[in-house]
Image (cartoon, rainbow, N blue to C red; front, top):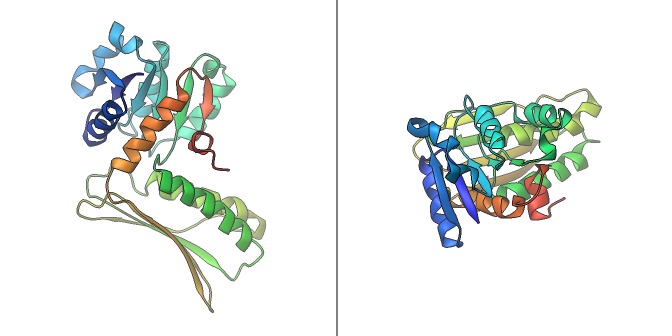
Length: 232
């Protein structure tokens, strides 16, 4: 498969390494100093672009890739990706190209998402339990709270609306080179329930993005990592 990289920082390099190990070819590497290369025949020849940049540039990057007929796997967080997906679905643009956006491409985190939804559902009738999310990341991370923490909070909020509560507190900690730790705590006067995921490196995120690109090849429309991994 031919892959274009949009964003060639730490994640971009890790994605390149894993893609090459899985037998794929990198046909374009787009970063801040060569954005004009998105106009190149090599970029347009890509089967899928994998985009990991910033909240300020993600939307434009996705749209520019689509203009060249290239579907996108997007891992940039801190922007209104869900609103963008809804907008692009309604205007029909996604009839001809594909998109997978996720706040986290890790297999383990997507299993955590499924468990988080289920636990929130189970605890919905028991308002004595109150949720709290803590996320810890390296000092280079641009957004706070993390996109993963926001997703976890949104999942919980869907069930807590029935009790008139939808806001879930999120504590964000930035220290050292921590790849990512997310902990969901449900606390009551009598006990505490905890779900947690701790990444050991960025490799899991990069692998998930490449797997998503493999799955997206040849498809149109907006899709999720739950579809890619078969997790309901």
